[in-house]
Length: 258
Length: 267
Image 1 (cartoon, each protein chain N blue to C red):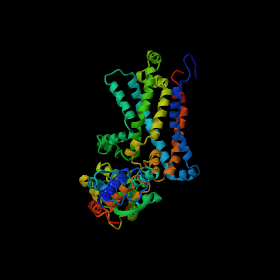
Image 2 (spheres, rainbow over the protein chains, first blue to last red):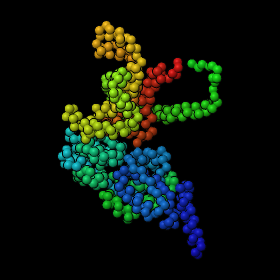
Image 3 (cartoon, rainbow over the protein chains, first blue to last red):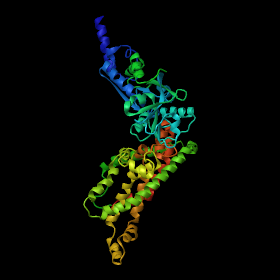
Image 4 (spheres, each protein chain N blue to C red):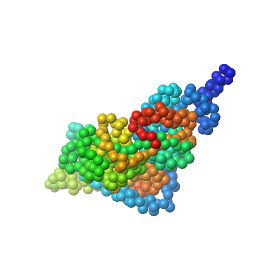
């Protein structure tokens, strides 16, 4: 028995190495655990996942030497467009089910893995004295939001709708980290970002909570993509994000369960 | 226009790369026309955002051009005629925005004119508002990026303009300012027009600095170019339709300036 097992392990290793070349994830590639993982994958992720995924990436790469997780963060709407235009990406983690649904069957069995809600970020010291969502409707308050096409912009619009106010933002930015950066730089008085972004920013910004009856939620799906160049490693990464270890990191960064 | 002399003719080695080169430059534009959803143009242009963005693009680029003329023509004269220490440095300063990626220009504008920028506080006390994320902000970004095109074009003309006419005006007793306004500027008017058109086209097409410093808000700081980005992010198929007005401008500029730029130097 010993020889065949060694052979099987060597075979699994070989397949693992060349898996970036083989498109179809046939049997035998994913079934062997542990050491079979190798190569690299490209992950497109919502920018709000930056800190959590950076942590998970270093944990995963440490557990699986020889693997590289290359993550591109950006607006989910933008990333979704890039994927549909043929960007060679293995895994997509979106801040909205809409942008995942846009991919149709390009996304294989998306799984909802976290939810997020919004919070008002203000520069340290809260120079404009923002106390509530309603304060954002004041004409002398400079507000930054995400572009209306980006998930955080969509959810922000829902919050304004729930509060029954009209906000005329001064800046409509490419993704949630750009909105956060506008607040950090002090160029605006307030920005609508996720609760996770306020937490990740540390003392760079202060948070003003949005009451739950006004707040809105967005659900994050994750999926391996149909044309993933390295489907085995891609599935292993998704499994890790969905695992208890992954949950721990996401919860610590302030994400909720779906 | 072709002149054949001894040794003239087409070297065979030139043809394939030249052909590939011109096709490479042509293909994306043609493909854009092919992929334009012609049947849905009405619906796409019917969206109010497009017209608002076009209006903001036109207004801001024309204001930027006017400001560039006001400051740029005297600056061009100074660069061409003044013989004082530091003028070489001034000329280098004018070329900074030409070589700087516009998005870096946007970052620099924050540091210079932002709320927390070097001049942020004085600007706010004079204007009563901050420049970033405002209409004056996008005009400022466009001036920064586009004015050098005007200055460089006009400077060359001042340099080669006929000094004899100016001297004649001086002997007749005209003041220096009068000579500048009524003799020198008319002399270089063709270059001023060409520079203004180049400057306007650049301002109209400005994207990086405008996106960053302006804020891309529908109805107030979203220009046609930054709208293309937003549209490409959620309706990529519609993006070519929005490119048409800007392409029309490019064609008009090319046709208008063809004598200046498209004719070989020797002719």
